[in-house]
Length: 112
Image (cartoon, rainbow, N blue to C red; front, side):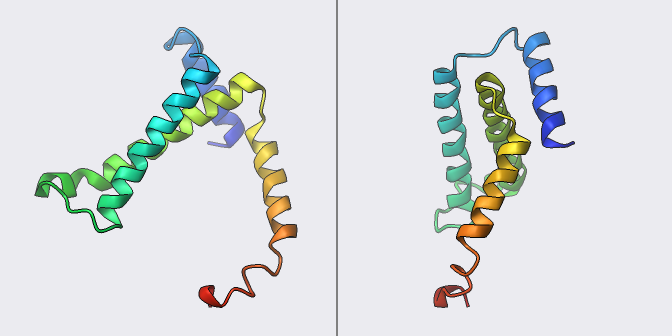
């Protein structure tokens, strides 16, 4: 699925199953909530936080994927609501980063 297809798919879902978009402010709050859930799982999976049970450790990778998809879904909702073409925005952002960071990371001794 392309980003453009994802935006169209989410829009169709919202209009048929979701009834309507939540307000932009509500979706921004939901996005922050979902990012927090990703952060929580990252602390367990890649940080020093201990799992509460063996079952939690077992299900965490699938849960991380699901939470990342939640982040993407809400971000796409916000893009649709605000008229942002994420394909175009990402392409422009990559061009900006490529010019800005052409030598920046190559010269970072901590990355070598």
